[in-house]
Length: 487
Ligand code: AMP
Ligand code: MG
Image 1 (cartoon, rainbow, N blue to C red):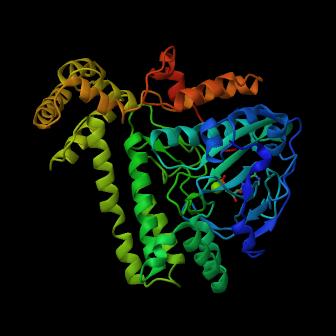
Image 2 (cartoon, rainbow, N blue to C red):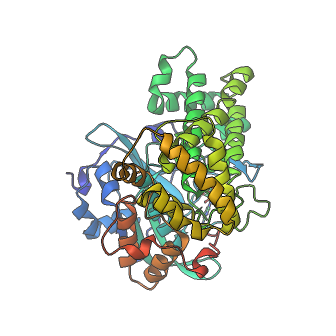
């Protein structure tokens, strides 16, 4: 276990130079204080969880202090936002403080979000409010616990700094951890500004630091692009299987590592709705739940365009063609497991599609359905779940197919079936209304609910005594929360 001053830095990205990022110091928050810290994320830096309570922790992550070896930099990037190219993006309110190695030799970027203005702030104040910082903290750690690749969150620091959004709020900072903060938009920036030398430098850095195995391949850039396609196909399959809606899938919010990145008005589905739009400024539904799949591919083709100096168009097209079949295979594999099947059958896709149609038309709670399906024997579970469906004869027809399908599967015995299904079907998910309750308390100065919710969500598959209220269907008001897009 390390103390805070024992971190080992090696700032590879900063060494790329001023064409890639600008040196900027964090602007401190007034009266910084710990809202919540993630012991699991602290372990990634070998930090003793007890150090989160020390005053120096809030000072470091509230922008007051810095390690001597840190080199805070604002990164430059661009990207496609809602389908249109925006040439002027970059870290407008976040800073890459430095890169840290842990004892296992893993590398973690420390990125402080809400750290004040930078050359890329445009009209923005460089700040992040408490509410959105809590949402990012909870979501990063909850997704990770579900097995969905994500950037991580070490802590949220609250403050007295006033920040204006629709109303006056308080500034906060999140310390985000990821093996890399390089986005599709980094490659787009050097491609569209026609800086081939720097684009090559970026490419070589990314290959060496993040895709070293691709350097062994005859065409390293092609191997890397293929890997990015594969990782994103798997990531989006997990989002779809678990009902996660990102909300702002702009190419500047897409990580080259295929991890969930840049949290905004995201939501987990409560009632199943394929057309769900969590972002209220998304009038066309470009980033609706079911559009995440084609948009994932669209974003990869935007990255492919930016990689045309390195890879032939033909090879890029061929790699892009892998996205949908890979997505489909990962998605079906996960859905089979969620339904309790241990082997594949040809008609499984139809069985899943039919179930989702029935859930859609009856507004069935997406997460609880799967959890309850594994709770008792198929007959008992189906009999109970039937009450949630309006189209009873439709459900009965599906239930009969499901019952026969389970009977053909080699796994027998309810105990084993329950154990396997509960291991992939969470009891607790980050519903918007749960986050909102924790935020309301935190805005009133009580951080205990943020901490409790974080703790519950860090073991989403395990039933936790006394936590039943976190596993319930949301109240009616909780299903229709408008999550502000300003953050
Ligand atoms: P986002 O929608 O959070 O992905 O941000 C899009 C772009 O706007 C990025 O370049 C951000 O750094 C920038 N940005 C967002 N909010 C602010 C803010 N309050 N101040 C400065 N820049 C911001
Ligand atoms: Mg962003």
